[in-house]
Image (cartoon, rainbow over all chains, first blue to last red):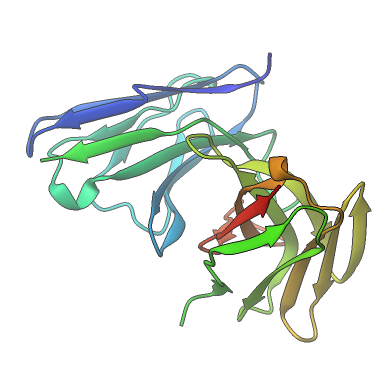
Length: 114
Length: 112
């Protein structure tokens, strides 16, 4: 089954404790992206990657890091999480970059930073 | 001003009603327009996408784009309780890295 898999689905942690949210896709997609979803603000892009070793900032990259060492994986790293990073996070992928390529989303990771 | 504006609702209608969901946008560079459906505790899934102006129909769903007015719509005919979800509009430019700009979503409930 074609899918985007995120782990963990839920995490409660404390300020300053480094964490990584993993994302893996099995569709051989070049393009991958991370979003956060907040009430009243919708989905906002954090980082994206057009291919292996190619990453770039989205609209809200502050406080986040990403890496793309393999085509299928695109982890999101919070080096020193803060409460304002409490949110619902989604990873997405598409075949190639470009406005006409639909993005496939994972089921989300709900992070609570205390 | 946000690039994409969408009424968050909530919107509640009886089963069988025609539902109209709308978004307005300010960036005339947008060329691709999408509607995603998001069920509770799930990620968004692509429902419809259209390029430039015009209509597109898929079963009970019709997407309309009016670029002159910077206005897009999604119509749901013969609405069903299973259509209850949050609907997000999204749009992107023609060229360059794929960057979707989303509306904040409209929460829709279809009452049996």
